[in-house]
Length: 400
Image (tube, rainbow, N blue to C red; front, side):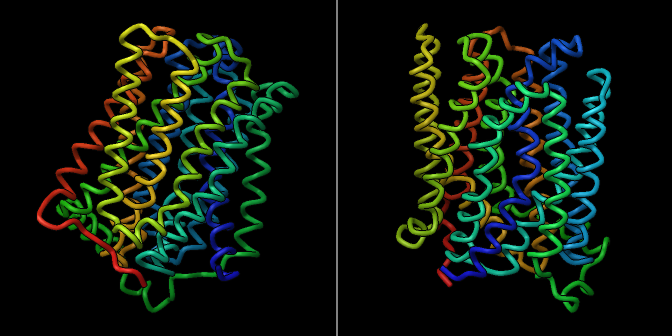
């Protein structure tokens, strides 16, 4: 592995993890936020949904900007907005203000979600792109593995507002990291071809590309299933199963280890079996594991061990779905990689926000609504994979 590949993976992974860190770190605090601000479960979940919506919609702006002005300048702007939103969250006096500043925070965080994927496409295609994307996800895994546990310590020491002080410091460190460690990957002669009109034209073209949309929504419903877990798991595991915030963080981290660990096999498996076959097998395994979990839950089996075991298996399969669909979706759109990455990210995060909004009202204190939401997303991803990659010849990406 070259040192430059590792450097890009570390820098891009940490920038990508900035937004998710702001989600995962405060998950153990959701029940406490509700008590502190006098808000119900749905209102507290709305602060998470607002973050997801802005994280998705904002990408439509930052993606084309990164094509027009290079990758670094929009990243600086995004990190600055994220920092400002984080400070606003620290001083939020009520749940409405917290929701508003979480929306601002998400607008800044979206730059770190969309632009690193475009940088990967600037640098590589095929299995090399899959290798870099997998390494990026390995670094990105610091968020779901460490953030909830770190959050539980911060909450214990400084309350839920301390979480937002920590992410404020991380945003400042991200700006420093961007300045010192990441070079520009979008040459000036490529930028002159990019414009607002060009971005709008690219969006129109992408929205009529069935292959792009199919792959994007396979990933979208895979991610949305995880969002359903994010929004409900702290209430289910802490209030229903009686876990402490610390134990909840450990439980959350175990699922992240499954997801990230299996994702590191993506490049090797793609080179051996092809991207299309991996996607089809992975979504089949994921859907099967979640259908079994829903069936046993409906049968009255309400045991944490069963929930933990089947989620661990399912998220392992999901770890293969996300990087492969991202690489395939962007493969034919190198000239507008930022714009394509933006549309993909927007569709995925808005899908996740809609799923949170749909599942939230059904929350009854048990795991059933959460499990049903996750399973529905997994089954939809399976159906989309059959429709998108089951036609005549699956799309395969040759190795570089």
